[in-house]
Image (cartoon, rainbow, N blue to C red; front, side, top):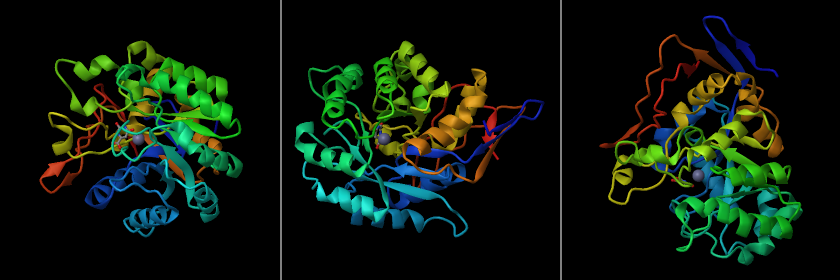
Length: 354
Ligand code: DOR
Ligand code: ZN
């Protein structure tokens, strides 16, 4: 372990700068508003392609990356890692182009209708087989939103149904394809990842380490605790927690920080997504400390994701400092008359990023 942990009165954790391997940055004013929080804490982030007009081509991804980079201060070396949105029309030729561009790190599978801006997603996995074949040949990882959306499948069973009906099928078709099962929420996901690693790994969000499904309805309905996949029973949260904190190479951080304006969250039919970026590392330090596993934090935030994506560890460092008093929750960014609410873990956090 290279992390320095001082355990006297002022506690300090010194880590390789973390990576966020699942992030929604959006575009325009919202991008401008949320980018600084990620840049302050992370060296790299895998940027999701589910914009209103999805990122489907290498040209789209380069233009989006330029949009992000233009907003970075000149002395900032934050690296956006780009993804492409898989559709049933994706041409397998795109995969070669994506790899030779050097800009694309992964292709993202959204089952149609599973979440925000997924209407162009995949209805039937058989229809993208030739793309998966090419990805396997070119060694380009597939990121999956692992939920099946069908009227006969209960919303809490969407992830386990996906594992049985889609993930294990892809594993049979393309045994050499590296797959990231994103934002896992169930014991079934933890088990399948342990079983199928090193070809399958998983990202885990901060909010899924904290929330169970009862928290969404705690004393009333909490729209800011609503996301997809929806949080599950406490027994599942405990499995996810054990997976994240245990130092296993198959589990790493992807915050799925997903900002939405309040006017879109606080609706009769509000949208799914939790904006966690500003609190992600402070919450993680608190959680790992509370479980006496601070020594495993750096593996989860800064090592195993890079290893899976075959990227070098970030040479830059990041320092977390523990205060004597709880750190106040930052207020989210304002955009015109609206704002984005920051995830509130619901318990005191003593850590902050220096
Ligand atoms: O809750 C979610 N929000 N889950 C996702 O998978 C996507 C995200 C978004 O883009 O808002
Ligand atoms: Zn996401």
